[in-house]
Amino acid sequence: MKRFEGKVAVVTGGARDLGRAVSVRLAEEGAKVCVNYARNEQNAKDTLEIIRQHGGEAIAVKADVTKEDEVQALFAKAAEAFGGKIDILINVAGGMVARKMVEEQTEDWYDFVMDLNMKSVWLCTREVLKYMGKGGAIVNFSSQAARDGGGPGASLYATSKAAVLCYTRAMAKELGPRGIRVNSVTPGMINTTFHDTFTKPEARENLHRTAPLRREGEPADIAGLVTYLASDDAAYITGTGVDINGGCFFS
Image (cartoon, rainbow, N blue to C red; front, side, top):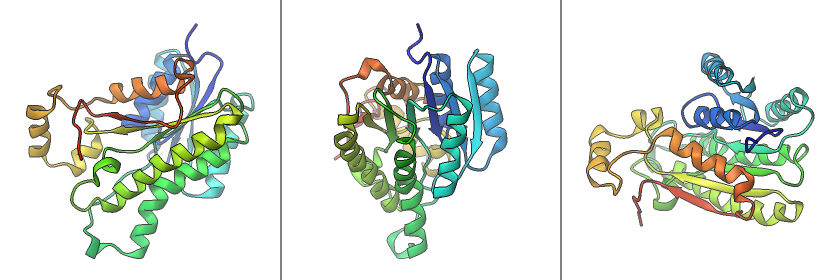
């Protein structure tokens, strides 16, 4: 028996990088997966093809998860496609978008970053409860930046991801009596387009020399942890923020 046989999962931002790795892993282990994407339809199609090549079942749904009406439509479509219930929510969607020092930040920028990383988690968590019952699992994506404040120009990104950690703990308390577990992961440097865009090559090279495991993480590393937290193997784990950074601890 596969760990997620008979279960339905929604993965926001599930069409590329970490989201794709999680979507594929869930499907490989038996889940029916709704792959959410915001803009790039080709990424979503590619992810569905990978899932189908592995014998999995999935649909792709376009939705901006910072918008209430689009979030409502996303979960309604997932439930309609897969029997009316949703067992697992993985909140991957988010990002830094750009580095801006505090003097460069506007009120609109503040709202945009906080909505992308925190409001999206709140909206999706609130909506999934219409379809999720006892035994459900939610896994949120925070970041190592939430632990150490982030690098130059990442203050709002780090702050929004710290909010996700706090919200995870709050929801674990609120939803635990309903039999729903809520956890989060805080990835460090993972080999994705995020770090291709926002991290200088010399910083990545330095990590390869100094990290205890002498390498960056890979999307498969994250997918392994996330699917564990979503599974019944983690039935007594809730309210956690699990660091996954190859032993690179920051203060």
